[in-house]
Image (cartoon, rainbow, N blue to C red; front, side, top):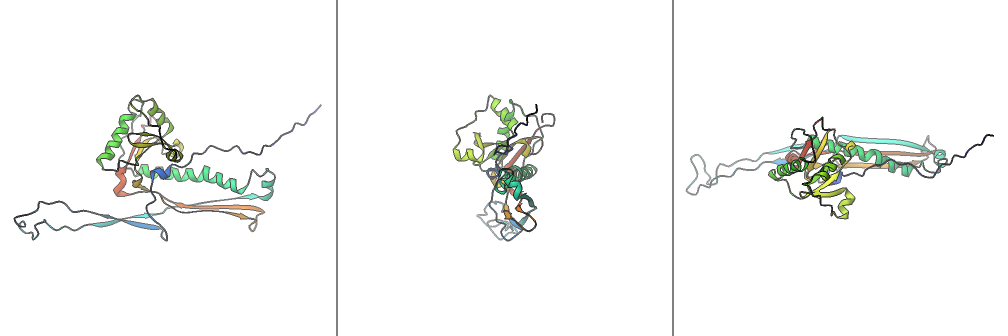
Length: 282
């Protein structure tokens, strides 16, 4: 006797896990690209200090204040390089016959969560690592040395006169596990809900600790301490469209475009400290 068993589809989708972006805590949106594809920032020098000539100017100089100096005003140009897009179609019957699990709104949300945000994050973190002002030799991080290495990094930023507030420590889940095992580290986990929603999980040595999946960070990433003033990460254009029954398609056509980039400013590079993992440790 043969029995045909029933296969029943549920009105749910087995979604992939996807971490929200942490980029906003690490970068800034200070500059405006409206109406332009490139912008230029001035870098202006200062004058040296002199001993005032109270009894009169020195020989060959007419001013008691010292030799008159000129100030240099050079520029650095920031040109947007990333102009990315995607498109896909959903047939009208495909939507109907999948119990509306395949529909434009949720598919677009999934595209943003699983594709767009990871791409932008990965690119931005890569730019920050490449442009870091401090990049010591790669080492093996352990529960015994992780705290001293973080203190060394913060000390470097202190000596560079980087603002002490708003510093962020970026770690992978593996490195965060080392921090929790370190007997010298006491993580301050009493974090405000607004910061938790942005991805801050604790505070250490005056810095917010942010945990980022290793898949979005450069290979052999150890940790990075950064102040948001160092990296400008503009998104000039971000547009998503859903067209119903466009020419040639019975259903919905989804299109998206995002124009973005990331720049480590030359005079702010020392506000980023990147510690790589030694290959064997990684």
